[in-house]
Image (cartoon, rainbow, N blue to C red; front, side, top):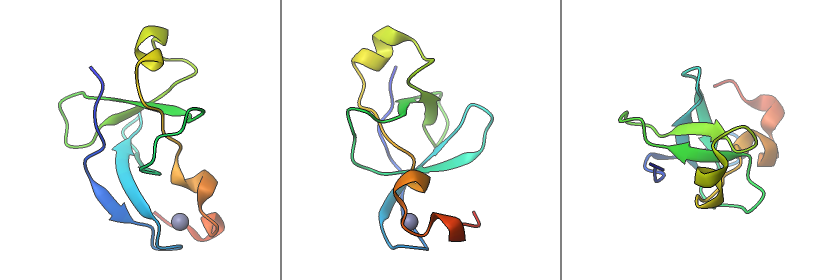
Amino acid sequence: MTARLALFGTCRSCGASLSWAKTASGKSIPLDPSPKPEGRFVLVDDGGRRPLAMLAATYDPEIVRDSPRYDDHFKACPHAGAWSE
Ligand SMILES: [Zn+2]
């Protein structure tokens, strides 16, 4: 079961739109809301408020094949060095 991006926010550093997910270890991770074919993550619905972001490279290939993929915003943010969240 894959999840849709639900929670939107804004990057405090560059003002870009973000969607929040969480990693397998429970940490919050900001994603760029536009899917990318080469994105690092697929989203999985685990019943929580935030979708779970799983690494596409190591997740179930059948699910990865049929799912939109997203990149984390740290990679794209022009001010990534200033992030404190
Ligand atoms: Zn940013």
